[in-house]
Length: 355
Ligand SMILES: CC(=O)N[C@H]1[C@@H](OP(=O)(O)OP(=O)(O)OC[C@H]2O[C@@H](n3ccc(=O)[nH]c3=O)[C@H](O)[C@@H]2O)O[C@H](CO)[C@@H](O)[C@@H]1O
Image (cartoon, rainbow, N blue to C red; front, side, top):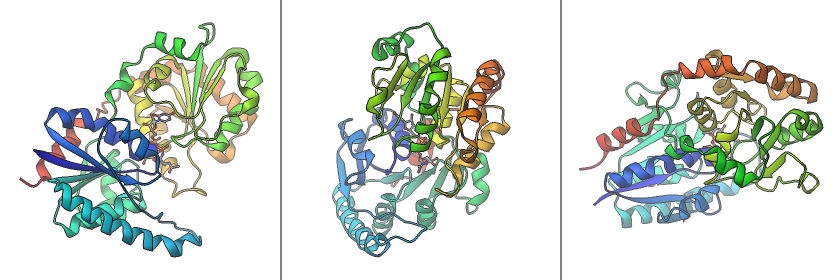
């Protein structure tokens, strides 16, 4: 049987592309195993699918000072030896990694065992975890063609990002049943990234009285970010994280306000949803979301509002602007030739597997 190990985690953006590959891999006869962290979001998402899950210890690779920087190297070393043993038991013919810190020990252990690996970089510039492992892997699949220039020659392959096919098959009616919203007003969906965004949540909640006059709001606010005082507010629904109903909620949305995580924005493009992107600030990241967002704005797919510029007035003004001009954005997105990356990524997996 063809065995494959998938890895990736820390935030859903490092898991949903793996989830998108699973049905096709199963169709091709792969026996799929997943190595992830002990307590990351990937554990529940993958275990719920019935895929064998192997938790390992992993550290976070920080670019800033933190006391954990002194203990995490030990966790990474432990993770390498755990992954080494797990890979020895499974004996996969290939490892596919979507990135995130937990993948570093998996790919290093795989390299010691001579198992080939293909990785995927979702963002405009390579993330730290992927940068560390690039020397050891066969191919780096990328979402943005521009990323190829940041990679060693002959390693990068433009594949696009794998998108869960069910995302495109939402049903509005199901969404209305699930949310209990009425159909009187257009719907704004707010997505703060898979872990939520406290800043985005606050900015939206501050203007709720104004927004609710004209729109219904579906707010995906992230784990631990529900607010009691807004529960039951007419026209407003808040959820921590939505799984199988997500396609139906997308189908309802007339406009989306989102962080600029690579997967979210490609889903919005595939769905042709007019969107405002509020990229994670360069102060809190390497600035990759800003580059993701700017590239979408340049193509006419998105309206970008930088986090530093977000306040009640700018947000309200941008929402009204986008709503008035939504057809211009839908037309631009309809012209995009971007395709679902599933087929091309699987082609790389097959080409680079052990026989
Ligand atoms: C803070 C942080 O490190 N963010 C990074 C992370 O973002 P993040 O994890 O937010 O990733 P993305 O926006 O790329 O993807 C989020 C995924 O979660 C799904 N979803 C979200 C909310 C929900 O309720 N249900 C649900 O299913 C979305 O449909 C999408 O498929 O990974 C991305 C891809 O490497 C990067 O571009 C981001 O910079």
